[in-house]
Length: 230
Image (cartoon, rainbow, N blue to C red):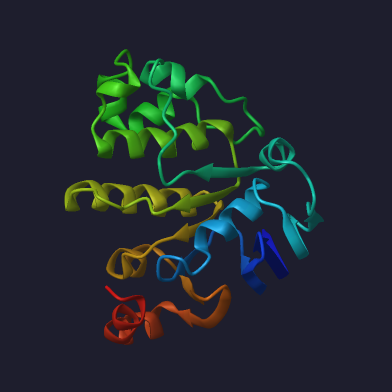
């Protein structure tokens, strides 16, 4: 579904990414872990088309989308769940959900969204500013599902949330996977990542330094936490 080869990027005179290779298959959740400053956010912004890459290729569903602007990548089926959630404060929950256009016939209907996120159904008329952090995260995920995106880039979805909310988000990610969609999960919460991801990449100083299946990832949890400085 997603194939990234030799991706490089710069911030001014500093090179942020050094030849990154990764892939996400259909119906697969892949995590990307790394310390703050390792290049995770730069990588996501390159994938979605908001940061210019200096080299390498990005393919979605086998098509080269390198150089395409963000709106064309979204139309091609790539959805971004931002780390700051990106909720429009002046719009209600339902208006936030209905705002983005659908990009495929796999778009979730409002009823499907409300069945999966009952709290959003209860608060459908509430302004975005009144939602808790967990409710905002659910809204950010649901809004992307409403578009019908087949590849979701999820940036730190568990950050700062209560364990019960994190567990619910984990269940939703597994539901997304079951539909055949792909998920690239940028996540420092190693314990959470191990509950939802099939494979894991470790990013350090702009380079992929390890690729692990979930069994190896679980076995090395202590080492990984030390490496990530957590």
